[in-house]
Image (cartoon, rainbow, N blue to C red; front, top):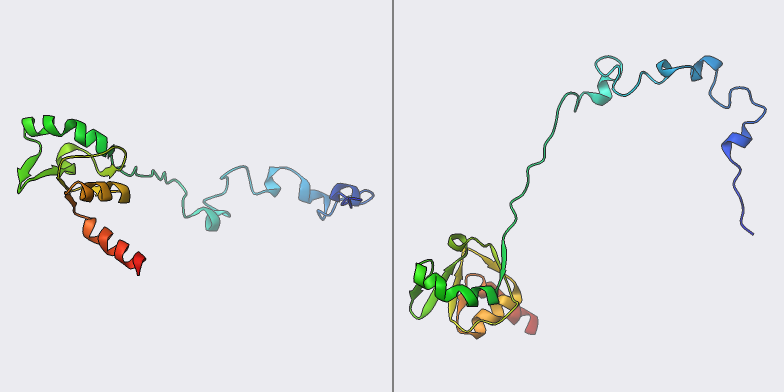
Length: 151
């Protein structure tokens, strides 16, 4: 059977003050020290001095815009015509900062040899870029991680 705990209210039956001391100790809001922040410049100062009268606003963190490899492969010819990407040594240099994205994810495939700059990439995206013959600024670290896992 479940043991039921006796409620404090029922324990105090027959006791005039219900464990609160004298009868004056339960009277009015003055016993609590006021309502809300009442008294915060006097007797409640020690607990409220840190944030009294201060409004703290949190700054929003800028989130990286995320794109996938299929978005890059669909738009790379348009970017070449408009001059947003450059070609060097057979590689198409895709600058994430200039194009307005901060991270590349691995959905889709890419056939062009690209070099990714000023943007981070997921492991699958880096692997697909390397398999296509391109490079990413983080691929040296990725290759080292892969080698350490094999050993």
